[in-house]
Each structure stands twice: as structure tokens, then as C-alpha cells.
Length: 455
Image (cartoon, rainbow, N blue to C red; front, side, top):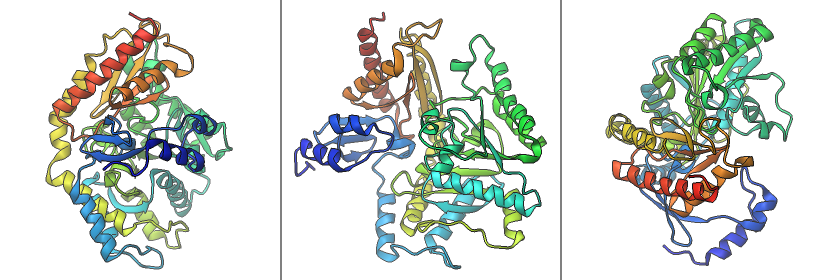
């Protein structure tokens, strides 16, 4: 359906009144952006009619693409029956109850309790309160400190942003003083000259050193993404997660797996912790739980923590108006049903995911590609001027920004993260879709290499 007004109308209106996330407001007032008004399958369409293959699944969330009538119908039917009621004051609603049970069925065996939020940011805020409440109830109220990683992303509220380790965010506000950060397991950027698995152990043991520095009696939890998504699809060496698990268990530290990006199939299993073989005590989810069709997040609370919380008595003083919203939960129920009934994750893990990773590896010999890394259905390409020294194409990530813009012009939505190009297409892609993605990405790489005179 064509827009009722020309694109310039929507762009001017957008610039005049709409403040966008993670955007230079001054610059956006000058340039504006694309206005999207339609989506089908794995394609999005702007108001000028351009068709773009969505190589980012919306914002890591539309794992099933955009044409899912079962989900949209479930939302519509729920809005007609019970559009809203809260979960305060000993009340609940049927979709929230049903989704909680469905989530228990698909998550690892230690999870039998769910706390619903509206987003991953709010879920990680909730994690802080759950962890502090847990240690208060077991008589260790001094355990208040959290450890996270540099370049991690756990959301953008004050608390979740504090948990994250992105310097640009921390420069703009004063974060929580009880959150500390350690090295990320980014071998390409930080492990020059080291064996990858040795580097993985070194990065993991930074956690042990930080615990010793802060005092085990003061440290409550370690939070991390199985694969750092917004940080640039940082896939840890195989040695990393087993060592993290060992340290947390030996040191009486709760382990939180932030599955907001990795969850619901992105890594080739239902959850990233399953892919990497570790057992978290709490697990953050959002995004793909509703295929992005409704805002919904939450925390899966493991038995170790939940048993204390439910037996300890006293009110847990935390909640959100829209926690367990009926329409959002209906979307979640329908999404899990599509994933399970059609064995979407299992089929993708056997076919399109290995094909996707293999086709991406054909780009490793490109003159400006320093590394191709990935897991399941997401990946990153590090762009370089010199492969041996890892010298970048240009200052301030200008090379990746140029490549991203050219990819979008070629009909492929990707993301520039630092000096890397990141892609995370829907897991329902077929091999032909992957071939289209690789072709459009290759042309963007060629154009970028020519722009920076690299042959």
C-alpha cells in the first residue's frame, strides 16, 4: 500500500517531533532517515517502494520474519477478549499463565519460574532486585556487587546500562557504583598473537581475579551474553564458558545468562547457554519471544533462587504495569507454538545455519575482511586495511559505516558495530535467501574496497 503522503512529508514530520534511540539528534535533524511502511517474509519496504532484505531481523527479534498470521491473529483475538489487566494484587490473566508454563517447557530444566517485564532492559533491572533479595533472604546481605564485561550490552535503562560495558553510554550518565567490568572474550581485537583457546581461558580467569579483588563475600552475580550481540557478535573461544561456569560455582556467585539476542533459536539451540554448555541461575529473555510483534521480556528464575524467594516470605517490592500484558503474552504463546510445531530451530540448525556460516566464510579472502566469525544465524565481518596488522580502513569506524550504507543501497539491511559489519537474518531463511544476502553483502564489500583504494 502506497503512503498517503510523499516520503518527504513523513521525513519532515519525523525530524520535527521524533527523538530516536542511539541517535545524534543534531545530525538527524539535518539528514533524516528512511521511513518503513511494509514488511513481508524477510523483506522490509520503505515509503519509496525500495525492497530491502532484513539482515538484522528487525533488531535481532523477528526470527520468524514478518509473515506470521498465527501470531497476528492471536494478538487480535486477545485484544477483543481481554485487552488488558494487571498482574498486581493477587490477580493474573490466562495468557500470562499459559505463556509462563510454555516457557518452562522450552527452557533448561532448572527453570520453573518466570517474572515478566516489557523489555530486556527491564528484565535486567529485575535481575538486580531478584539477586539482592535472594542474598538478603539467605543471610548474606553484603553480597551486592555485580560483575559484567567490557563492551557488553544489557539494555539502556540506568541499571541495565550500568550492567552493560559500553563506554559511550557510561560517559553520558552516572551508573550504579556496585557494577564492575572485566575483559571481553574478543580474540580478534584483544588476543593478538595468542592461541584462541588460551586467550579464552585468560579472559574467563579475569572473573576470578576480579572476585578476589572485590572479595567473594561481596560479589553477588556475573552477567553475560552467551555471544555478545550488540558488541559485535563476539563468539567466545570454546574454552571460555566452561571456565566461567567453574568459577561461579566454586565462588558462590550467581550466573546470569542474558539471552535477549541469543534466545529462541539464534545460536542453533533454543538458548545460547545450551549451545555453549553452561547452566545459568537466571536467564534474561525478550525480543524473539514474541517475534518482535509485541513488547515482552522477562527473567527465567532458576530453582536455586526461586526456592528461596518463594519460601522466604515478605513482599518482593518490584513490578511493572504491563508485566504479563495479555496481548503480549498471547503473541508469545503463538510464537512458541510456531517454533515448536514446525521444528523451526531444529530444521534451521541442520540446514540453513551451517550453509549461512559456510557461505560467509567464502568472504574471508576478500581484501578488506580481516575475520569472519559467527554462530547459528548471526555473524560479523571485521573490516581491515591490512590483514596481518588488523589496521582499520579509516578512523572512527568510517569503513564499516560506508560498507553498511552501501549494503542498504544494494537492498540489504546490516549493522555497523565498531569496524565490523554485523548480520543476523531471520532463522526461517532458506538457502536462496542466504545466497541473496551474500551477493548483496559482497557487492557492498567490493564498493567499500574501491572507495578506500584497497585491492
